[in-house]
Image (cartoon, rainbow, N blue to C red):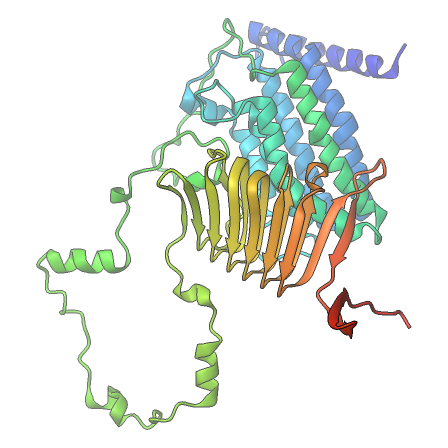
Length: 475
């Protein structure tokens, strides 16, 4: 008899023994417990166990060879998939809860996902790309929250694919960095991708293409009991951090005013707003201070000139203007920016962003990145052109078609082209460190890296100058 089948039979027998001995409560086993045992032996649950055993198992094997934080975050990925398996079992024996109940029902999975996300915060690790790829990939597990076309989510299959696109941005960086350095990291990155594509995607496509199927005649989900009065409640998690948060944000008027708004509010209130101010004495005045002179030192001048332009940047924006132009401005440290409601007549203009990642889902007419630093952009298709101007350290991934790509006055640019965009015309001017990565011609998923020249030799010959890229010998 097949070894896997024996293991499943032993698992089912063990569950029944626990039920018969009252393991889920005192007295005789409840009907719901019998239903839980039956749900655990459902073909969809068995298939998910196979997904964990094969795909997650391969990822863990690769992580064991690497160790450190990579192994730690891989264990969190395994915990997240185990948590989703338990939720799938409970769904088969539970009636569909309301919106608030659903958020509480999915909290165990959300807590694990938030744990992975917290590992990417703080001081950047040498394996930051591994942490981000793993943490961002877990957003794919939120397909279980799909409740219908009006729930604000893509359908389960599309959600898994879209969630992986954000993680793939960092996963590809691992493949490029370790391609010729350490095969264990390459194996880990490939295993992570196969866990979702085709792993999770094919599982959802086969068993839950329209979302989870709740039990109409099952038990009613009961929210956890509230805290006993007198105890100190734990501080609530920030609303934006939860992947399954269903509460709408409070209007801005309910938040305390800050900055100049607070100043004007206090002035208009009629209070003695000057009562708390200190009187300026003669020794505080600049003209009477011995440590101040009318001469500006060279160091002071340099500090003012070299201060980053972001200090004077305006408020962050991510909005559609006049129905034709998406404006993304002054976003700093935002790794999960998404534009998902766009069409081929609209353009995207990205300005003054730093250390952020933007994902553009859908076809747009034109995309421009201007004066950005350490900016990552993942997009599907553009009708006209993709432009990079006055930037430093940008990374761009084209997953569809881009007929024209231009790079102007930019230092440090990584372009990831898909197979469909290999015929794109790439124009560079006044730029350096431009690398283009294309899919490998071999059967594996590695990338071939091509550095574009930015030094040229000009030779006067036959009445005209002949220009050719500079070449450097290894001697």
